[in-house]
Image 1 (cartoon, rainbow, N blue to C red):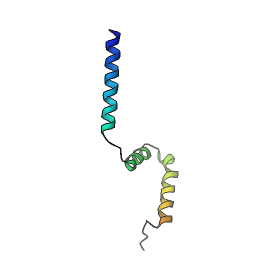
Image 2: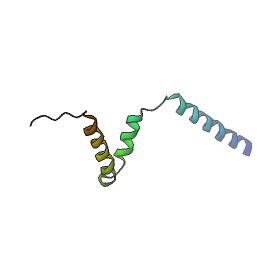
Image 3: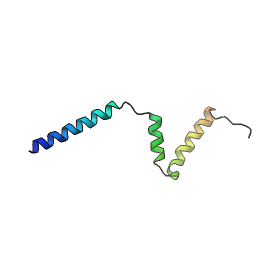
Image 4: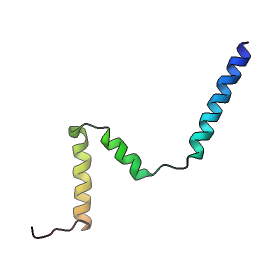
Amino acid sequence: MIYVIIGIIVVVAVVLLVVRNLRGPSDPVDSFRRQIDALSPEARRPTVDQVRRVDEDSGETEQNGS
């Protein structure tokens, strides 16, 4: 009986791994956003500031006169 239970657990684990791998690679930007959203505002502030500095340094952000 114990072998049946262990077999079922192994089969379920393999199925879960296969399903997870078949979903395809996750979008790294989406993953980053989920991680940032999980942080408190105080914890995410250094990362947001760093991204803003990089945008400003690269000239990607547009400054309009208003």
